Length: 240
Image: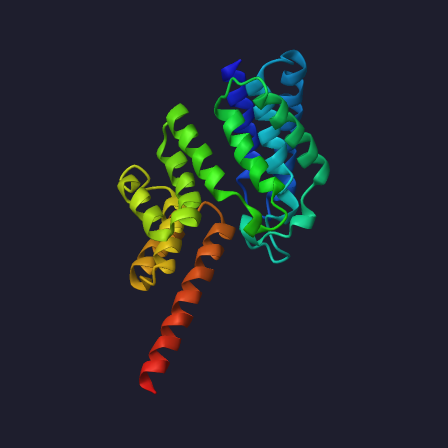
């Protein structure tokens, strides 16, 4: 059952990890994964991890209409128009999360679904319970140790304890994530918050080199443009 669930999750990710131009063509992969997860749930109605898997896919796919703007640029979760999220999918996903957690047999899919549920329940980005998300990622780290899980946790840590704490958390991961776009994107963002512009530019350049899609590369270039603009403004102020 675990192997089948993992395959369903991989199918979903194949459709989800795409750029705006490919999204309409690959959305059926996400929908097929959700269909298969629901089928598994009908066959294993008391299995909390299958409830968690189904909830996770629903809660993630609910955000699909808001993931890209009209020009095809990536829109980060905190910047998304939440009115575009599918309320129907969210309600179904939240009900499944609550049902799964009542079994008190937590597993990785349930924990990830619980994290997605906290995002879904936040009416505004500032309502997000980052402390609870940090705790859930800490639990997921113990269940399923992975540098990617730690990287994701670092986002929550940056919100709770600041960018310096998050940067200290991810720096030991660099060798293992040396080919991972998201590592350098996050590192650059944290360095920007700490006003370490030159180091941020190096990280962002690396992220662009590792970008899997044009949308990812464009998103990083936006950060570089901002760095250059801020640098020019500082230089102008010094010249006065």
